[in-house]
Each structure stands twice: as structure tokens, then as C-alpha cells.
Length: 379
Picture 1: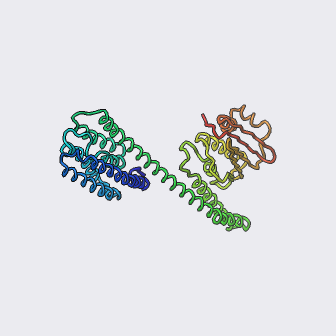
Picture 2: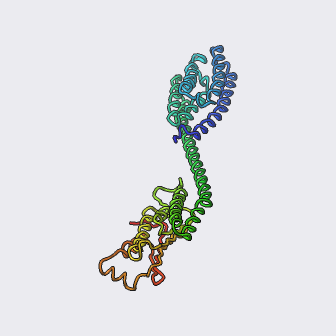
Picture 3: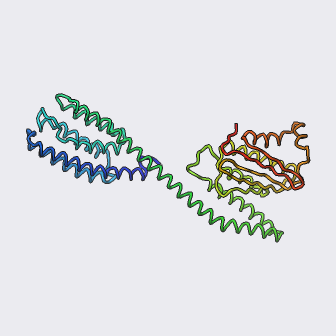
């Protein structure tokens, strides 16, 4: 969404033009009061009065015209700037060649700030240069104060324009963040509804189908597959976070992909667990290697349980099966024979992450426990 045309940017511009309307009235009152006070300086009082009336009329029209976004066209802003410059250029004809103060005075700030608000820093620079050039062009001698006023016009316009641009960008980003937060809240609400209703029904169908057997068991297995798929989708939706950096990965979602065949049960926290992308991928690869070992050495359909626990400084992941266990000395024998699956695919990966890999095996089965720092990154 562009910071020029977004609703938030337009709202900021509307508020700035409303503030400019108040400023236009203030500088108009100041210009009229000074003109009346210095009325003796006018060599052509009738022309001076006509210029003052024109300033009052244009101020009223500009306040009305700038109040609606669709009326803020280039034609309006060009006319605003042209009138301000015309009043500057007509000053010698009204006050005489030896004038000290221009006819509009600070009234020209209205056009300058309008260009700064609408066209940002570039518009402020263009308007500031044109108004300053017109003011200096009239003077027979340029005093230090004349140069100072012109210098302030040239640098003030871009500064105000840059500040307006920054406000619009921040408002646009805030609007996007609020929309994303609202979408995330709605996703969480839908996820709770699905979890409390559909997932529980599917789990019930799966359990009852297994108890009844026959065709009901097939139906229960299908319900179990759909439950796992739906749970994975919910986790993926919950992991969507607009503030999350692109180089991080939610390992909860990655581990949930291991449940697709129905023999792997993954238990994770109910919230996203962000890890550096390299760390998450290596940790999932080590987990997948453990599951592959169960398939190879226990049975293709042997159940596997994966448990993830997250702390602020580390994650703990365990992979457990109920196979016959690994005979004593078997891993050392495999490494001596050149089969480095466990030492490289599992322990090597975890060691590269700066973590530890502990193995417990026996007649109860086999369990790997990985502890990895959350700030680590694979080489």
C-alpha cells in the first residue's frame, strides 16, 4: 500500500491542511494589520486595498478548496503559488521602488506549506526557491535580513515536506500493522472454534472407529488423517506474524509436517517458536533422521513421539519410540564400519548448532533428547 494514496496517508494530509487553514487565517490577520498600520507606505492606496481584498478572498477560497482531498489538484496548488508570487512582484508598483517590506509578508507561507504537505520535500523545495527568488528579485539592495528570510524559505519548505512524508509513512505502517493484528486475532479465534469443535469430533470418530473395527476402522483412520492435516493448517496460520523477521522459522510448523503419515505424533507448545532458519532446518533434519532410523530398524509403521519444549534461551526436543532398543556397542561398531548415520546426521548436526544430543536406549525403546540454544545458527 502506497504512503501517497493509502487511507492513513490521506487522513494525515487532511489533518495537516486543517492546521494550515488556521495558520492561513493567522498570517492573513497579521498581513492586514501591518498594511493598515503602515498605510502611509502605499503610493497607490487603491491598488493596495484591492490586493488586501484579494488576499482575504483567496484565503477563504483556499481554506474551502483544500478541505476536500479530491480538490487538491495541481491546478489549485499552482494557482495558490502563482497568486503568492504575483503579490510579491506587484509590491514595487503599490509601495514604490524603495519599499522595505513586501505587500503579502508572511502570507506567502500558506502556498509554501501547501506544496510541502501535498508534494512533500520536493514540493517544498520548488515552492521555497520560487518564492525566495521572487522576493529577492524585487529588491534594489539585498540586506542581511532579506537573505535570511529567503534562506529560511528554501530550507523550511523541504524540512516541512520531509516531516509530512514521514508522518504519512508511519501512519501507513501503523495501519498495516493494525490490519495484520486484527487478521491474526481473527485467525486465532477461528482456530479456537475449529479446535473446540471439528478437531474434537474427528478425534472421537478416529477413536470409536478403531474400537468398532471393520469399515468403521477405515473411517476412523481417514478421520485421523484429516485431524492431523487440519491441525497442521491451524499451526501454520498461527505462525503468521507480520513482525517476525524473514530469516526466522517457526519450528512448530516444520515439525508438524512430520505427522503426515499418521505414525508420528508431534507435541509442541501452543504458540510459535521462532528459531534462526538454519538452526530450525538442521534440528528438523536431525529429527527426521531419528524417524528414518525407526523406520529402518524397528518397523515401517512403528509409532514415534516427538516432543518440543521451548524456553527463552533454548529449545528441548525429544524423539521416542517403543522398539527393542539399540544393543550395547552397536553405534560404535557402526561408526567403525564407516556407517556414520547417527554420528553425522544426528549428533554432528546438533553439535554444529552448539547443542547436546543425549541417547537413552533399552528394552523400553529408544529416546533422543536434543538441547539447542535459541540463538545458535548452523555453519
